[in-house]
Length: 315
Picture (spheres, one colour):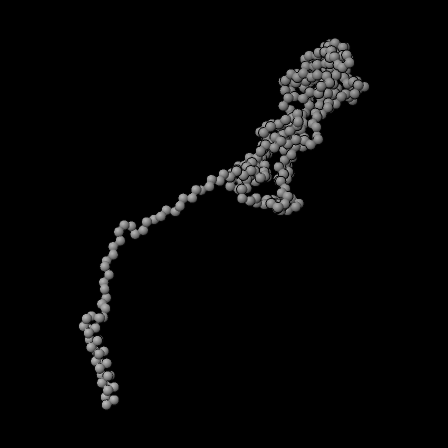
């Protein structure tokens, strides 16, 4: 009986499970998928948000100063860095200098050797005669071109020396301590140039605008001489460019020069004016040769023929 009881309970349980499953299925116990309603967005998909405005600081930089002026070129400014300088120097080869050491400034390339003023070719040596002007007085001259002394009187001329005496005056000039000196002034006609020249005793005469200057071009350029006589004189440089004279001053003496160079891009660079002066070399005109008192030549004669007559044809 017990064995049948277990089976009956099993069958009842199975029946309950079957009935429950059937009821669940009948009532739609299996969930069905549910459709989602359509969603539509209104307005822009997104709204751009501008970045915040941060005020920009205004920084005012000072203009960079000229750090150096190699070659005397104005306005060389290196605002980021100073590149090294590389150049060739005869006898030493390539020279490299730059930041972190002594920077050797390249030479300007020209310097003044001397300044001179030529004496006029005829100089007055003195007058042999009375204390007052007399047309017969012998007037002593010296020819600076030939270094030959000669003498003439008023109205006489010397074809050899191409000069004629037209006037003679003797002035009384008061010196220091009350002393009085007799100073002769002679007017001559230069038959070579046609000009009238006045010579004063004791004052070597040089014509105006007769100055000249000797300069020398050198390192970093090949050496050469430069003879300057006027503003505007130019000396061409190898590789392009030139030196140009902008001012002359014989009293100092001084020569002002500008250097014109050509850059790699073909642009002309003009340096600041450079004043060239002598170093402890005072300029002085050459003194005329004074005739010796004992050798009184005849008119127009050389010292060796001092015994010739006053009317010698070699005036």
